[in-house]
Image (cartoon, rainbow, N blue to C red; front, side, top):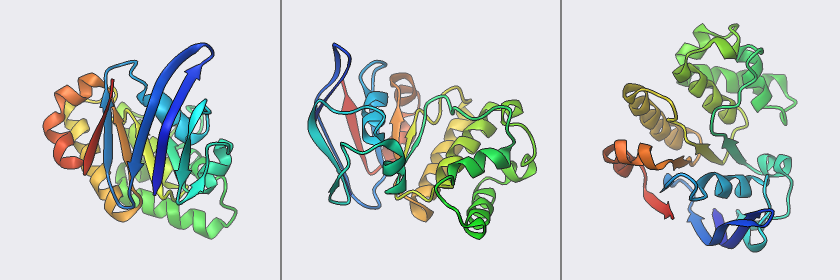
Amino acid sequence: MLQVTNIDVAYGDVQVLFDVSLDIKEGELVAVIGANGAGKTTLLKTISGILKPQKGSIAFEDKTISDLYPDKIVGGGIVHVPEGRLLFPEMSVTENLRMGAFLTKNKGTIADRMEQVFTLFPRLKEREKQAAGTLSGGEQQMLAIGRGIMAKPKLLMMDEPSLGLSPKLVGQVFDLTQQINKEWASPCCWWNKMCAIRARSQIAPLSWRMGVLY
């Protein structure tokens, strides 16, 4: 489904990724872990088209996407839930969710997807008119994931989905990841070093495979 082959990625003169490869098959749930600064977010941004590899290639469903802009990659089925959630704080829960479906013009389709998100995250339904910036950390993470789901991804990539959450909420995020994997897409989760250490007993059975960047 996704093939990342021998890519090098740099920020200016500073190279971050060296000859990195990754393969994700349809239906898999894959976790990539590594120390802070290892390049997990850089890898995700490169797959998303925000950064371009200096060497190597990226293919999705047997089509090269290395040279595509992010909106084209989203349109092809890859969705990126960024680290730190990056919600629109002054906009309501419903408005943030609609932003996730910006490539969809059919209002009926958008309404159906939103109802599915509310089924997955009932708390968001209770807060649908509330400004995103006033939600709790856990609720904001639900909203960030729900916004990603609104694009109906074939591959959902989540960067640090447990960042800043309590241990109880981290467990809930893990459970939701499994549910999304079964019902929606193939989540690919990025975890930082501390999260991997703190929750390794949950990550290992959660994912089909794990990759390490170092």
